[in-house]
Image 1: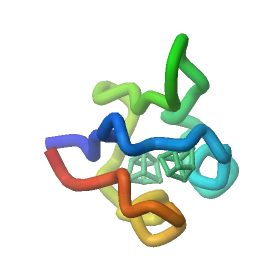
Image 2 (image 1 turned 180 degrees about the horizontal axis):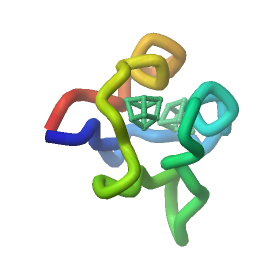
Image 3 (image 1 turned 180 degrees about the vertical axis):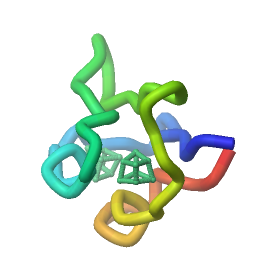
Length: 56
Ligand code: SF4
Ligand code: SF4
């Protein structure tokens, strides 16, 4: 299962900068993870200041 971003996201962009496979992009209201690209490394979850990212 890929990591997922909850609606707690404040769109700071830190996670996208950390992702080694560029699976994170800015969506309409918050950042989003492409589940087909995510390799479950966990780097983004460790980086999020509001703990909005968890393994789905
Ligand atoms: Fe990218 Fe890793 Fe986060 Fe998946 S878990 S979105 S590969 S940083
Ligand atoms: Fe949103 Fe957290 Fe990513 Fe920042 S690091 S854009 S708050 S999910």
